[in-house]
Amino acid sequence: MADKSKNTDDIEVLEEGSIYFAFRPKVETHDPSGLKDVERFSMILVPSGRKSVRVAIIGRKRLPEIDSHEREWGFIETVGKDPKKLGQDLAEQHQDTKTRGERTYPAYRPAGQGVYAFVQKGRDMHLTYALSDPEKPGEVQKAFNIAPEASFAVSVKNPEKGQPRAAGLSDEDKADYPKSKQEEFEGRRFAPTDPSLLDYEGAEFVMVGARRNPEEDYDLDIEEKADKMSDERVFRHLHMAKTRNPVEPLFEGKWA
Image 1 (tube, one colour):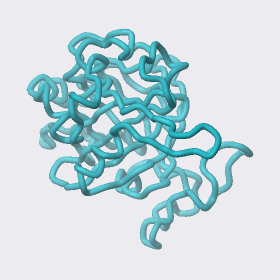
Image 2: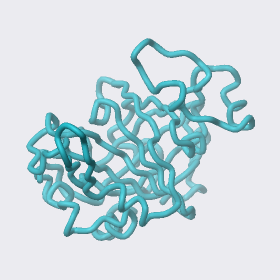
Image 3: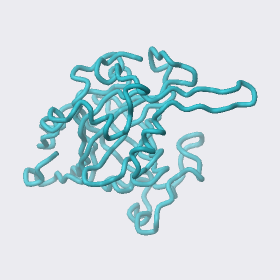
Image 4: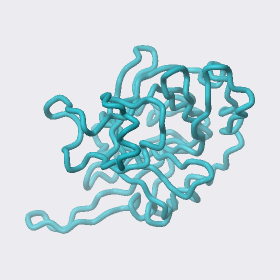
């Protein structure tokens, strides 16, 4: 994705790979028409050269605003090495209940795909991405604030530090880091420069809107890489199927 020999003095590429945005409609909502019909909005990272996938849940179901440097909280729901299992998780789900019988949770819909890089800029870690699809943002991308390209400052939260009441994950759901990883926080509330801290389920993070033109600002070639990305990669990487995961949000920007 990026030529590390082109890095400026204060820029270092920490990780790169493929990125996907997807959403699951609310239970029994098979024809969503807006954010009010969305149960979860996910950002899925597939690092290059590794057989693992991270599924992150974005708290308020949209990416932060860039110009106002808005903050958004999220957490890692799943870290997996089996793409087929991920495909099952993203498919339609059914659950039997005592009071309402069987309830259907509609399949995830892909809403964007492209490439990403985690870069270290000074003392901060930035997540930067560029989309390959859709070619032009539609109503779905605008609702989730998925720009054609953008970057966000990302900090990983120390699970041993407190947090405001009614915010974040419960203690039992937070990441359980091994001692070597926990030491990276050095007693601070956040660790800003190690994407491997996101390789643990329950890892919490904060994203802050940073740049609209990351390729120029960070001297990266992510837009060129995104242009070469296959339209079908979302189905190969995530084991989605056109017969069960509606594709109109991805290729046409339309709710489906």
